[in-house]
Length: 414
Image (cartoon, helix red, strand yellow):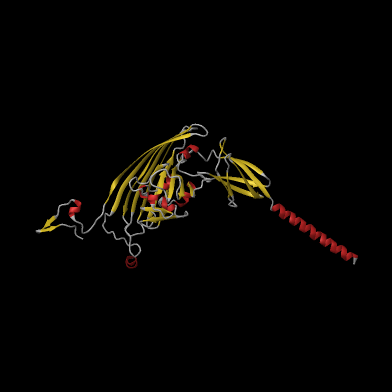
C-alpha cells in the first residue's frame, strides 16, 4: 500500500511539474514586448509617417517628434514605413523591448512634396482619403486611364465609352460627376477651364509618369475651380531619380489593346541635374463596335536639386484619335443588335485632338519651418471633331443649296 502511494505521489508530482512548465511557457509566449523608435529625415524628426506591421496589419503613426511605439509578441516582423512615397521595409527581431532608429533620407525628397503640400492632407487630417504610391500604380498599369485604375477605391464609379478602359473614360466619386471632382497635377489645375470636366484621353499612359496620387472623397483641400463636392484628385509626377536607368515595356490585352512605353532617366549628373522622359503608344479596337483608339503621349522633365532648392521644368501631353462611342443604346437595341452596338456608322466619326502642358516649379527651403513654392503653367490644345448628321439644313452650316436637274436640294440626304 505504501509503495502504491509513493508511485501515485510521484505521478502527481510529474504531472504538476509538467502543467507548471507548460503554463509558464504559454505565459512567456503571450508576453508582449514594446517596439519603439524614431523616424527621421536626416537629422530632423519625421512626423505623420505611417508604420504598419506586415505580419499583423497593426500600425501606428509617428508623433510630432518622429517617435512611435507598438506592443507585439515575441517574433520576427517587417515594418512598412511610408508617407507619400514607396514604403521602406525594416526587419525587426523582437525578443525583448527594442528601440530602433529609421532614417528616411534615401526614400523621401521633401522639396518634391512641397509641390503638392497645399492640396494634400496628412494621415491625421479629418478628411477621408486614399494614398496610392507608384508601386501600387505599376501593378495595375496596362495602358488604361487613371480613372479605371482607381475603380477599386471606396465610393468610386468609373465609365469607359469604348468599354476597354482606353479612350474616353470618366470618374464619379460619391455620385458626383467629373465637374465636381477637382484634379490637380503637381498642384496645377487640370479640369477644363470652361466646362470643369476632365478629359483623361488627352493624357494617355500618364500613370507611367505618376509618382503618387491622393484621392480625397467629399469636400477636401481643393484650391481651384468649382466646389469639390465629389472629390479632389491630386497627382505628383515622377520624382528626381538618383540613378540612371532605361526601360522598355509592352502590354497586350483584350480587343486588340496594346501599350508600348519607352522611359529613361540620366540620374543625378554631378549630384544636381537630372533629365528624364517617356514616350508611349496605345492602340485598342474597343469593346463597342468601331470604338477604336489611336493614342500617343510624351513626358519630358529637367530638374536641378540641392539641399534647399528644387527647380523642375516639365512638359507633357498627348495626341488622340478616337472613334466615338458615347451614344447610348436602348434595351431593345441591345436585345436585337447586341451589347456592342454602336449607332455611329460614318467612317470619320472621330475626335482628333492634341493637348500640350508646360510647367515650371521652383521650390526653396528657407528654414526648418518655412519654404516657398512658385509654379507657372501653360496649356495649349488644338484639334477637331468630325461628325455626319443626316437630314440637316444646308443653311444651318452656311452652305449654298444644291441645284440638281432643276431641283433645289435644301437638306443633306439621309
